[in-house]
Image 1 (cartoon, one colour):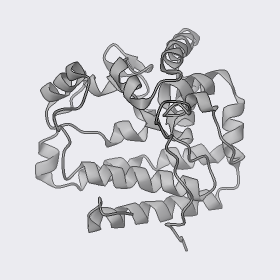
Image 2 (tube, rainbow, N blue to C red):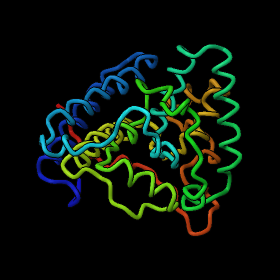
Image 3 (spheres, rainbow, N blue to C red):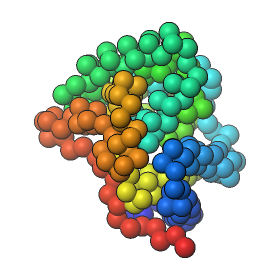
Image 4 (cartoon, rainbow, N blue to C red):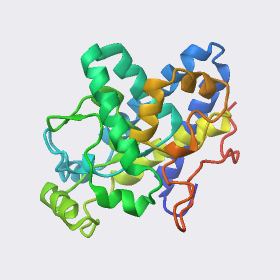
Length: 251
């Protein structure tokens, strides 16, 4: 995949990507596709469990720590749809209305801004409730991938409005990214939307337009350009997209 991965991480990326691509190609019922990808989230737990013990012991993340939930989250379309599906199945009507309202405010605040401008807003994630993730079991891959070695430093980074202190757990981070990119690359190679979206903006659209999921299963862009991770017209900005480059050749 690239020089940023160790040989072990490259192997993990390829193994997961080939497995996910194989399963997606074998799935005939469109209604089962999100379940296939959601089921692969267990790979994050497995990758973490097999990370070096010293790296795992240095992880400072604990329940109630929400500094990382105040920065923009870039996601793939299937991640948004998994979160939306979880909300629609488990939230009360009142809670659903509340998250839609928060997502609408978030979307309006992010509209037309660059990634750097959005990061400076330091707004809480639309699914953050009382300091905890209200969709934890269905949380996006970037959230599953992030681990900090210093909770205090995370808070300082939030105050600085930039990430000035390195809090990444080396020995864990690369493994988590190998899993994340393996899943996302496989979905793109299977023909599904590879555009990077802003979680809050796309979640608002997913919860208010049932055709988003239909478009995704038809291998079309699931969400509008206003939901892109980087605003299309932001000065000097380029919106990320995962290309179907043929990394994997499952048997």
